[in-house]
Amino acid sequence: MDIPLSVKEFDILLYLAECYPKVVFSEEIIEHTYNEEFDLFSSVLRVHISNLRKKLQAASGQNLLVTVKGKGYHLWKNSEK
Image (cartoon, rainbow, N blue to C red):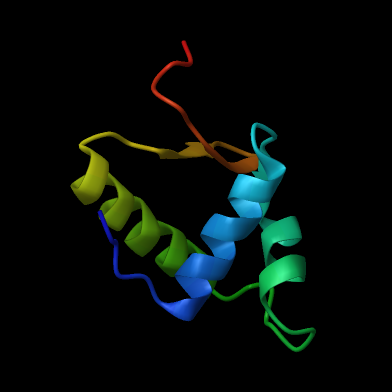
């Protein structure tokens, strides 16, 4: 199944997949997917994460992109407990 993603959503998903199963800090995602002029206080990353989470959930029926409070994000596989 194809999931239509923006370029930035794809970049974020790719980076999370490359780091799997590690929890990735927001700063790491920003460093690897945005240019050096990105405003660290911007909510843009959270918006991209939210949109990506919704698209993945709509396609899979599961929450595959998990927020770890105070740490960052990681991908989840349904075989994990």
